[in-house]
Length: 41
Image (tube, rainbow, N blue to C red):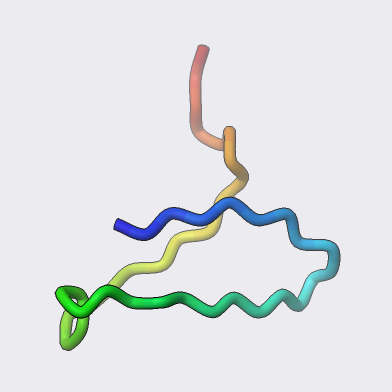
């Protein structure tokens, strides 16, 4: 699993990932949400 925390400062933000070899030739899913979004207390 690759997990990155970012704080974008503009609406167009480019991200580059180093993909592990075991992930190559696999279908991957990329999801973007606020860090605390969807959590309940």
